[in-house]
Image (tube, rainbow, N blue to C red; front, side, top):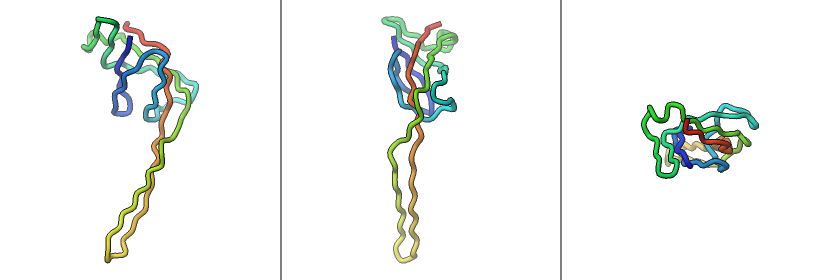
Length: 103
């Protein structure tokens, strides 16, 4: 059985026991989070409509908060002494999928 969940503006295909790195969720490490699936496949049975997915639930445990790689940017405009340096490091949460219930 697997499910497709949406979090952080992205979709992820997950199975029970799998670890997924998603954009940071507002739960501290060690906490539980419930995600609503947008697609659920159980063998030959596929649940995809909102009425079928009304009671379906994906439970996950927040393992840790991590950071992605550092991205450095530099903007330069010649002849105007215009230089700007910036950096970004995305925050992620590592989720472990504990259960998928079709409802």
